[in-house]
Image (cartoon, rainbow, N blue to C red; front, side, top):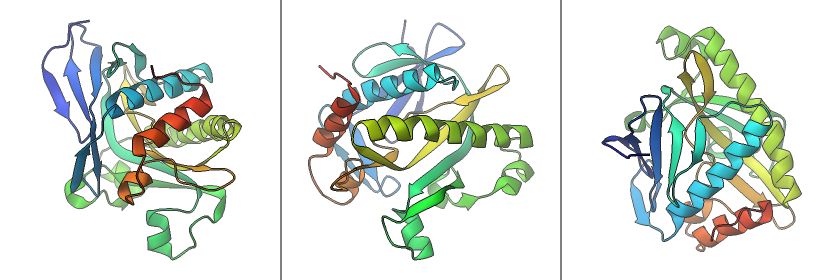
Length: 237
């Protein structure tokens, strides 16, 4: 498939048009960012690791009946995906308290949340990705009521599939964010699922195995990403 012009450049990925109007190429770069892009570094192998990690997860979700934009791997750092009309909203599920919810609500990190919490955030770096609710989404025209309901439904289906998947690899799925878009009238999962967009802890030691290693200067960021993959049965070489 021919990679044409760059359509969008995010903090860690670039999106390119192709000769197929319904398909895009998603390029996973080695850029690693934190704190809304205020800190950016290059980490060797990161693009390849996240690309293959994301492909594995998307295929698992598709096998469980969850529609995604993923089509196939194209190269070590590229995937072919469906061209979505993206909804500018992040869906966040938390199974265990960590990160911003600890700071916002003063709860203890590591508190198990039953039931899991669900939050919407507006995807807007300039505004700091503020928390929003169903009413904001509908009032400002970011999505319809039916689309909001579908995003919630799919986000919790993802939770059911991935909690068990990671637990089988000796890991806790602490929290994660998802993004959705519309493809030919259907709401489907877009963007990526990798250790960049979720929190994963070792089930025994509670060692952090995700992007918090970069945020908190814990070191061995990509080594941890690869270890997570290996526990799931992903081969990176």
